[in-house]
Length: 295
Ligand code: PMP
Image (tube, rainbow, N blue to C red; front, side, top):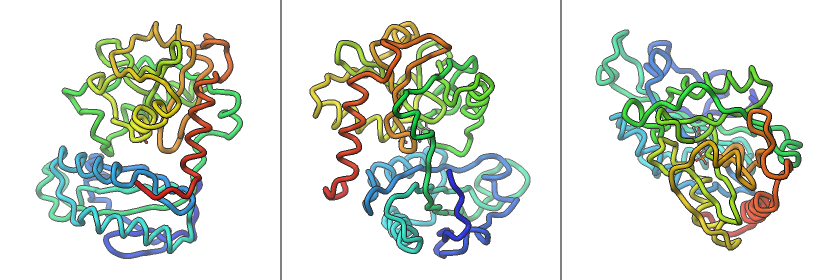
């Protein structure tokens, strides 16, 4: 993600220069990773699936018992205002709620006021050539944190579980890692959801595997996949199935749709990005760059 120092950041109702946007060292987001966030995209001046992202953000906040200082409408205005102020029509948007300033103890309710901020910038998560060639990934040794401990459906500021798996990927010279849950089933990647293709069907781990309920995942399941005639299955997925799939691809707001061609050095399918993944990518690109109204 490029950091553009001339961009304005919306923070608690004000637009300030990015090098002047600050939160306190006593904010529990810094002290304990206490808060939640969203990653959202705008294409062609339209914010993609903003309602779904705002809904998920407020569910995350509720699940960590953080009461935001702003309504969804106010946050929507903040996002649109920040995009306008920075003249961005294609952008990555980071929305964050922090627990706010408190004491050095854990007590979240001794932090009287949460902070909200919105960063709008451009993003290139993976190099463009990887979308052509497909990417290699590994299977992380580290397991995804179980639902019972910290539900991955909460998009919290506690990303160390993902970061430690990402470090395993970087150490193996790849950019993403598949994470298994503590029962050994496939859950998701460090920052993306995962799909396999088998005989034209799209299969993705169910929510009960312990995953972030990805907005792009749902878009593929409910809109893109059916539009292209693919049946969709949401169910438990074993690692063997992934290794034996015709195609594997990842979805995420930042990653969009990207093909996987190697897992732990083993080729998937024919070893190139397959036709189903390419079809979904093309349909995704066509739809997000159209002038259809936001939904
Ligand atoms: N899983 C994790 C752990 C993520 O961080 C993300 C990115 N937000 C995703 C999946 C993909 O979700 P979405 O399509 O909503 O960006």
